[in-house]
Length: 247
Image (cartoon, rainbow, N blue to C red; front, side):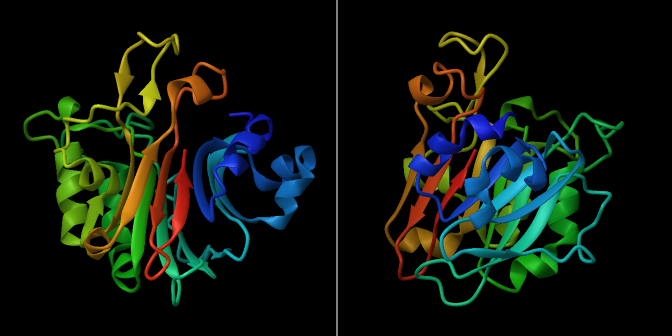
C-alpha cells in the first residue's frame, strides 16, 4: 500500500523487473510520483488503490495481452518482458498475488488461484524462459490432508513446468525449513508471528550458473514502517538471466 512513499526504497534495489502486490493503479501512482512515467507498468485489480503491479525499468518493457488474461483469476498477471539485460528474447512472467481466502475460494476441493493460473497459463509458461513470482499467501506448514490448494501441490505443479524456488535453491533448504521470513504479521515488531509466503520460481536451468537471492532486512522494511513484507531480490548472471525484485 502507498507505493508512492516507497519508490526511493524500491529504486535503491535497482530492479530491472519488479512484482509489487497491493499497489495502486498506474495513473494514481504516476500522479503522485511522476518518475514512474518512465517505467513500463502493467496493473491488474478491481480496487484502484490496491492491485497487482508489474514494473519494468531501464530497457525492460512489458507486454500484457488483456485478451489472454483470465479475469476470473484476479491479481494474476501474465506478461512478456522484453529488453532485459543479458537475455536474448522475452522472459515470460506470471505475477502473483494469491487471494486464497477470498470469494469462497477456501474450500477443500478448490485448487486455489495459483494452481488455476498455472493450468490456465501452462502454454504461456512453457513457450519461453519463465518466472512465477509474488505473494502466494501460502506455506507447506498450513497444508491440510487432501486439500487441493496446499502449497506442496503448487510446488509440484511448478516443478512440472521446470521451475524451482530461487530462495530454496540458493539456501539448500526444503519448503517449510526457511530460516528467513518474508512477512511480519499483525504488530510488525521483531517478535511478531512471521511467515515465508513470498516466492520467486525460476527455471531449473538457471541454478547451474551463478545467481543470488537476497531477502530484505527487517530494519529496512518493517522496522522503518514501509511494509509488513520484505522484498526478495533475485540476480542472475547476464549470460542467461535477469535481475528482478519482488515485494
